[in-house]
Image 1 (cartoon, rainbow, N blue to C red):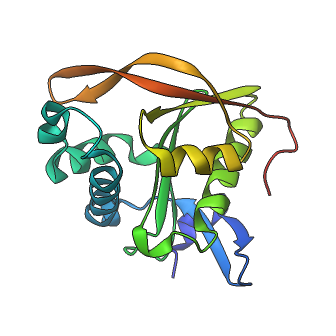
Image 2: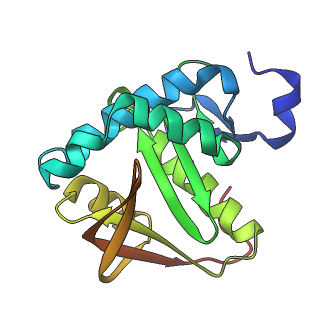
Image 3: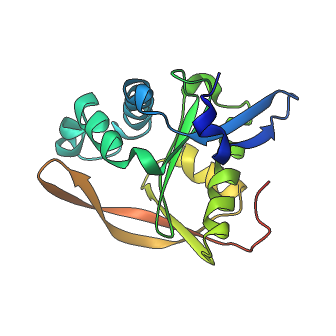
Length: 182
């Protein structure tokens, strides 16, 4: 059950299976579960395709600390304490997007990105963007299926403890309109 204080910002959607879901703000009590989701998702998608120096600093503790700092911007799908996915928006960027392996192929990712796009459009963003690790083909195919277009390869500046890590990434963009999303 979602606490009453969180229901003012909940988006109700339906998966292709007919199952209703809610996309909601993250709760402070679930930082550990969200950090586990993000850590596992990041390592599953990136460990084999990014430099080893970056993999070494992408620890569970690092993800938990970053989530605690950004919790007010995190949106979650799934029961309190058992998230199936999350997204985080920073300005006009879809900054973080992760779906648990167990939720892949269920429609959770499509619902979650629709929520992110709707929130960006509601904020007046005309063209949203995101960065995708070069070689993350599963994510790239998903973004393209959702109407995002690769606009090029750019130098990404990724947060790491005590600084940033520079690495080339694919940049994706999507033109949004006020009516985008559910």
